[in-house]
Image 1 (cartoon, rainbow, N blue to C red):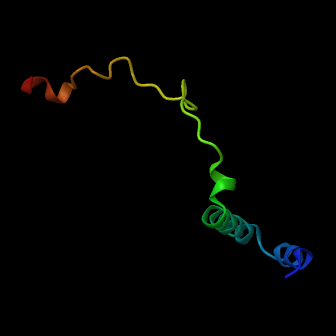
Image 2: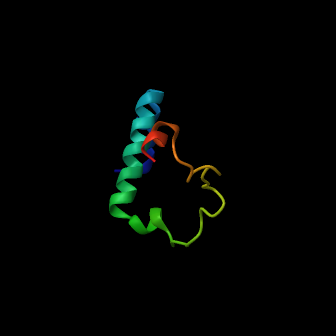
Length: 67
């Protein structure tokens, strides 16, 4: 099928249908071309993005009677 034929068909869809189509296309890319989606993995790419509370290790109020 020619690309311009697909574009014409896509233009007739509602915005909601286009969003569903986009999700389906991303699924197909993932399924058949994993190397395009995944890329090279790098350790530490989330460094500084995730943190825990300073009182994370403190006992919870609910369990004080058991400690």
